[in-house]
Image (cartoon, rainbow, N blue to C red; front, side, top):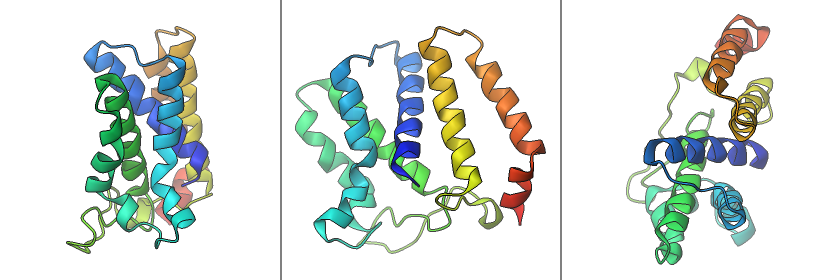
Length: 166
């Protein structure tokens, strides 16, 4: 997935966490941490490591977040953003080897026909849904889940859905 989609999905995960734990994670430093950690697994290409191997594992998420353990809210933000990246990549055609190099099994969250291709219209729709829900919540719109429901209905009826099923 593209970096903007990863940030939108991480923002959505953080918002759900805020609601579930009744905490505020909206200050400037949290947005910086969220943005960096949401794309951090893709730094593997900058480091010369094969893509979607070591940096796309569960233990990498914990290790990368550990330096922020001194502030529990920053740690939770970083870990959630990193894990949201892994979640999003498991929606793609390539999937992830979450336990690499110990186990080279590729994990997916969607059936083969529904997996998302990077840069496709389906990814764009996923980004729009995540971004739209976050904006709705930021504006204080209490019916943001209803907004998400109508986007989902549109998605199911649209040609984009037929593109996925092919």
